[in-house]
Image 1: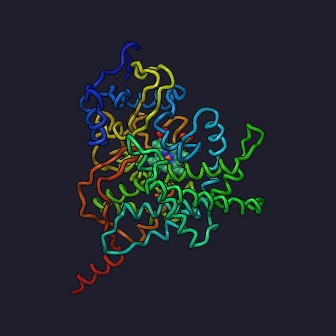
Image 2: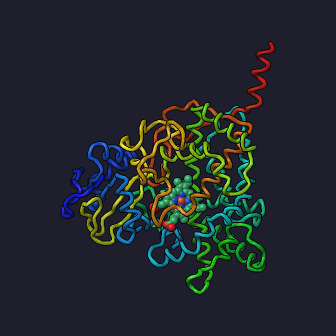
Image 3: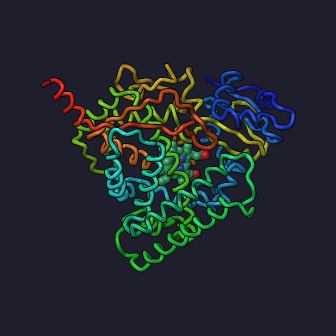
Length: 464
Ligand code: HEM
């Protein structure tokens, strides 16, 4: 479908409150505000948040235009300011030449070789977490946050930290991530110099984290000729082949670690919470995953082994279609531009939404249902959606650098977990809640049962 109109025309302005525009509605309704806007007003529209103009575009072709075709016109701007203030200028937040240099240097780390090095750490932690308490309701959201944080620390620093130090590191990074997420979700934030308890706590945790990473970094400098064993080693060895083989400075290494932690921790934990919420309601899908694991002998030789787990991957993709944790992607218009033939003014905000495109009935049949088979090529339910209608890791040059890492983290946990366990839940109507990432309105509660115990109990009841 070609989406063109006169370049002079802006998308229709949807009227809101005279002073605040749609600020209150968007804050109150969250995700559902945007789904309502798309249903009522179509693929391209304009709203106001106070004095700020926001253009919303919901068509797969718009996704491509904003994220792939015009990255110099649609840049990471003011929306990323609260993050820049706290994270410095790592890969997630930087722009221009600085960003392209970093991306060039860091991309190989997330390729097969890098991932194979991190795989041992992911394997160890996923196995450790795959035996939670049996027959009790577990706050699964919290459990998944703990799991992904521990995977991050194990993969970033390997065996460098002592158990006590590890506990402290986990606590400090949780505290930092909490405040950063909160500030990203608020429209207005008090300045960090305000003497609030949470600001003091943040500074203390941030300093602890930074000093500890520095200590580990300094101790690694002394053994720089040993082979890479974790992400810190990989970062310290990375070289800019187009920039005189320069290495990252200590501050740049720190900025990257913090960026990976912020970009990867919550996104993966939320995806895994939704994943188990969906599986808990679909026991037959759990059995199909388990059958595939048995067929593969629960083996996972290297990071390419994901391709042997096609059904598991289909269930993960289907989860990310329904619940993409990066559900809305915002950019600033660096200059006057067009999207779908509509005029976009310089300095305004432009947003596209993986969530809305991925639940659009024009591209997906029964869009709100969990049907993993739609991702299984060759299956009767396989469905070829338009190219840019499935973008959970975004597209274009600023797509997710950690996508393979995230998929390994999710898949390896599932492979260990379904060896002996199955899940159920009494929750049925958990709603989406999101400003930056796609959370659930309440914590996901999961009950784990032991598959072997279940089978034994069944045999005993037959014998009686
Ligand atoms: C299921 C889990 C994940 C999802 C759904 C996800 C999704 C995304 C999305 C949508 C973006 C684009 C954001 C934007 O353009 O505004 C992104 C960027 C990014 N992600 Fe992920 N992510 C996940 C896990 C991870 C992990 C585990 C890491 C690191 C280990 C990571 C590191 C990054 C970084 C550094 C960027 C910025 C890349 C750049 O601008 O060059 N992500 N991610």
